[in-house]
Structures are given as C-alpha cells and as structure tokens.
Image (cartoon, rainbow, N blue to C red; front, side, top):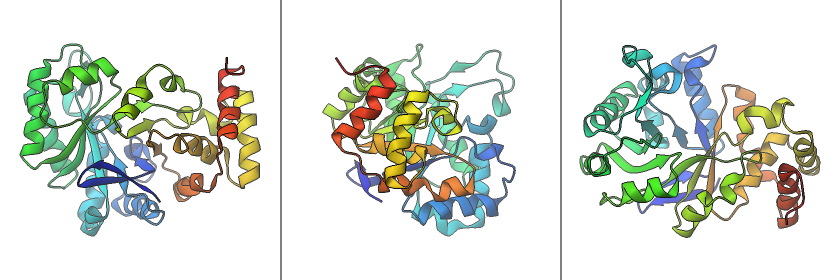
Length: 298
C-alpha cells in the first residue's frame, strides 16, 4: 500500500477506511470493530475516517470503545475526524434547526468531545465538515491554528469546500490546510473539470474522495448501464469486482486521490486493496470516463 505525504510529519495510506456507518452495523461490539480495523491493517490501510456527526453522533464512541479495549491499535493508525455540522440528534437533540457552527467555542468543544469519545489524546487530522456561510474566517482560522498549537490536533483541513471557501479560510491561518475531502467518483466526476481537483493538484494538496463508489450504485446494480459495462470489462481483465475498478480509476489520477471506502461488510473490507491489482492506462481511464459522460470527449 502506497502512502501519501499529508504534512512533513504525517502520511496517510492511499486507501482510507471510512467509518460513517460504523454505528449502524448489526454488531457494534469492540471486538467486531477491532476486527474491521485489523482487516484494514492487514492490507496496509492505516487511515481511519470519522466525523462527530456520524451515526447520529455515536460512531466516534463506538470506535473509541474498540480503541479502549485494544489500545495497541492507536499507534498503528491515523485518525481523521470532522466537525461543524449541528443536527437535531444525539447531544444536539435540542437544536431547533440543522446548521453549521465554525465558531471557536464549537471547534474547541468538538475537538474535546472527539478526543474523549475515541479515547485518544490527539487527532491526526481535523476537517471542517461543510462550508459555513456564516463563518467568521478570522475566528475559525485562529481556532484551527490553536487546535494544532495545543497538540490536540496534528493537522487540519476541510471537506466539501470550493476553492473560494478554501482561500478565504486559509487567508486567516498560519497553519497550512492539508486536504479537502470532496465527493469524487466515476459517477460524480465533475470535480475533474470544474476546478475542484485542479486547484488542489496545483498546490500539491492530496484529495480525499468520499463516496468513491457513487453511494454504492456502482456495485449494487443500480448504476448507469454503460458505466457498469465499461467497469465490468476492466474487472474481468483484472479478475476483480466493479468496485475495485472504480477505485483504481481514482487512484490512477496524478492528483494523489485517497478514496474513502465505507463498508461494514467484512468480505468487502478484506477486498479493499484489490483496487491496487487493476492495470489502468490512459485509454482505459478514458473508456470509463467516456461511459460516465455518455459521449466521447470533445
């Protein structure tokens, strides 16, 4: 498993295990969560993606129980988590409306909640989960700088930001934003042409890609027939499933894309690294892209 340099002293595995459904599994025991993490580690997947809101604000605690039961896991992994979404659920059940909170007080409280719930003393990467139209970038930037300076957070980044959101926040920070986690897949490919990927690629900022299987549609049979046909041809040539090809399509891009793979199915977890087996040359990449566009490139 290749590794990607995130900051001078932090690297992530090229494939990331996403935990947004962790609290929704039939078995949320510490032993079962530990088994999932160990299945990832056996493939060289060391980076775990969390968020405070996942599982109705319960997923971090589920993960934390596993880390408490098997503390040796902590030194083998990198933990990403996110903050700023407040929804009427869990500890925010009294909220009148779903909203974003990038205030310094909320960021500090979120960091402390995440540390406590996951039974850790440092977050490897903290992301602002969604752009906040009410953001005071000076306050937010200072709070993120403070989180790093305090030692509670090693690095900071964003999620779902457009380039103007990125530059606004970065303008008020001493710490360099390290990544943007955006939706990117064969079916959600607009980032390759709308500037999302180009902006980060120009600045050598690795990109975390959420929903790399198009919300599962690429493997469930619900996706576009032409896209599935193109993926199937490559899958058969490489003796893997369609999902592995869809992930390999992202991995092949020179922008250093880190697909975030979310599943509770152990057999799928064990097969996450199959994407590395796929041979993806330029013409193969464009065959899949052409199928996704529904027409040949201009």
